Image (cartoon, rainbow, N blue to C red; front, top):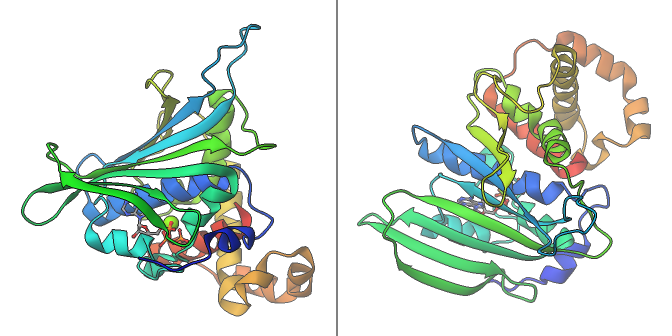
Length: 286
Ligand SMILES: Nc1ncnc2c1ncn2[C@@H]1O[C@H](COP(=O)(O)OP(=O)(O)OP(=O)(O)O)[C@@H](O)[C@H]1O
Ligand SMILES: [Mg+2]
């Protein structure tokens, strides 16, 4: 049981998030859940939910929600407790700020979790909704699962007024790849497959594979290079300055000399460092 003013927490989210932020946050959570379990065929499936009414002009109906499914560790008691804690530090070693889920309620009316997890004796099921009042977890239902593997489906539904996604899958794919690219290309790290499709699984696009083959939107070598450079850059900034200062143009300008120096110095990047500053960038930039 939490005692948090959820509405205030959501209102306090920095202005520079976009409608893609919560989707990226939930995909990253899925990737982390998979990294924890390490199943042989780790995958995050993103399904778009469209407005039920078909359009007369044959254009695609508007995207109003997403389902993000992973075959990771599931909502064990520990992950449940972490979800229930504001600024949870469970994922702190991976750069987690413990805040990602709150971005969901900035753009969507509801967040539902449906999860299967190994409770030590068998598979349990857990469902709940993210609350909007004082409790982060509401309407929780626990049961025994018939399934023989763990995993989670997070549904983001009811896109808020005045918010919109592009309707073409390929355009959404591009936006997601741009934001998730650091995970996809991190050296020495095999990212689970990330797939995007319509809600019935049709028109599947591969956003990422471990070797970057078959991707729907494949970044060019130059884009990858530019990304790597930017990440090295923001990692060093992050260690030097308060995170909230990193990306304002003026503070960058002020740090210019430092930064040139730093970029010259950096060579390798360890996975944990990389994930750490990606997470920081994510919270600020996404
Ligand atoms: N798909 C998932 N599978 C298992 N546990 C999850 C999943 N998504 C979220 N959780 C749990 O919920 C917690 C809260 O998630 P949230 O994204 O809000 O914060 P975080 O991931 O810890 O940090 P960050 O702010 O960087 O995202 C996580 O720490 C994790 O324990
Ligand atoms: Mg998270």
